[in-house]
Image: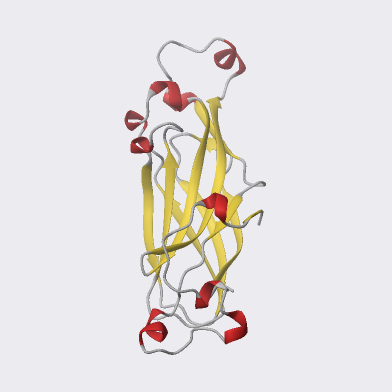
Length: 192
């Protein structure tokens, strides 16, 4: 069982202009106190074929994290269109919301984003040069893809020989020995 569980993510101001800031209201619970902050990141995938076009839109530290329920609004600037190939601006892409603890990513929420012109005539007869101020983004917020990664939330317990979880839960996320990050295909996928 994870020490932190996302209970809800609400996408605010959606659909919106491509150039509008992103806003996510994130709710989560912490079931055990954590010594360090949580790091939340929002990443815009600029190209399905080349991750060098990915843009880190925001990275924030949230803490201290004691037992309880929390909620905050993560706001991020839109992606820089000059860093996206023109052929990748219009169409479907992905937005990733991640959370890490002590440099270990333990949850990733992926959303499909559809970028298209806000006018039917422009959609049917697109101009040769992209009109970025006429592009509307629509985040498909009702179908997020949630991937969880097991991490050790209490590495200090491992160093002193204490067990992070009782022996009958040794395979769960909190008690796992430190391991390399698994690929999303190896992990549980589910919808919030």
